[in-house]
Length: 340
Image 1 (cartoon, rainbow, N blue to C red):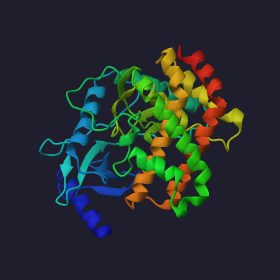
Image 2: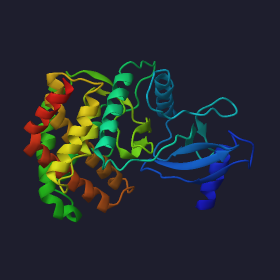
Image 3: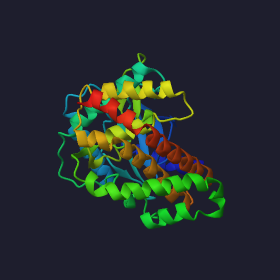
Image 4: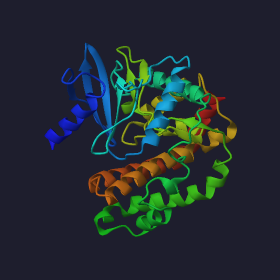
């Protein structure tokens, strides 16, 4: 298996560089892609191989976004696709896999434990949102907005998810209470979709988190990564996605609120929200957690993700939903103070 993977990596890189003139080593790979670092002629690159789809239009859209964003006066770096020797930024192997090569970006993934780092993340997220609002390209987004939760995973219709939550498979019986919380929140969310659709829309990154940003040695965000899921969605969804990761009820309450405040104050330096958007933030944070749960449930049904991962996200989703119910008013007050 390793030999086969090296063969197709060599096949890809031969379309960029003279044969055998590169050095590769393993990089951190996410749930959707394989990543390899590459050195050629004293320059470093990052090779991404798409493992979950073979849809060139999705990758073309991602690259079009990156090209358009690169024309903006950004204070941080973004991935820069490299053209092959025949001028292409997308390579397809003999086995049908899609790959792209990007220039290496300096920095490390942050822990987001320090408030200064979190404030920088918030400021960068706000700046990215403001820049994406100005981007226009003549291609349709490949992905649907978060609030169309019925499209989260092809194996998971909304009715199937609701049925699963009410009558879980035997192997999920210890998560029955958590699944009932999710059922109630999904039902509540669906009653609000028509109102949410009226909120301002724009392009959003949709997956901003510690694994998709880099910081320099001073803890300042130096790069934003992984624009694979950019789509037209609620403008405020970008903020909600980021905030969801700071809700860790196992952490001291004062630390959680300090992190949330640091992020929102940074975000508010370059992005403001309407009253209706701020009021929607709690339900949209819940939506992010629900979306991730459905995504991994679908992967489990496809025999890609393990049952333990699904159980983990069931628990996380339920905990975050309950936290939001308990802290909704305080969160909204904090958002009003920073986002208007």
